[in-house]
Image (tube, rainbow, N blue to C red; front, side):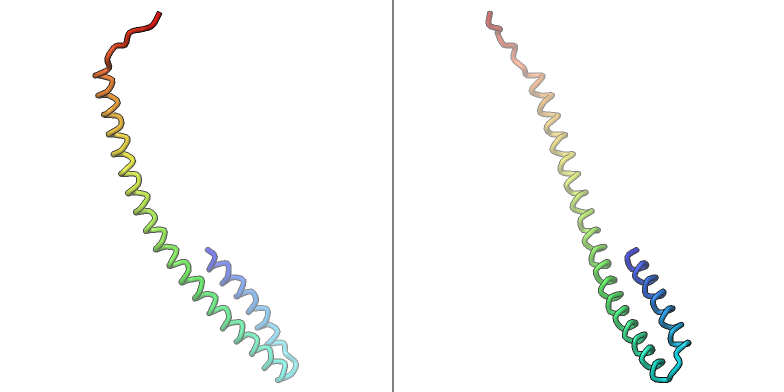
Length: 101
């Protein structure tokens, strides 16, 4: 989603600048604006690549985290199952205690 927003912003910016290039009154003005567009494209491409790599890395980390959470859930299920079995066993072996008067 972030990549999409970045791309849309860039496309609007380039469209505005492209309009300026078309409306340039002199060759020098056109050359300057074309240089600006080229530089903007280069910066965008760099940022796009950085963002893409970050998002891919985040996807890998999220997948790894899901595995860890699943493992934790399995361990917790086993722990509470054993705790319940122990509580039932202790209830069965409960020794009546004398009450103080």
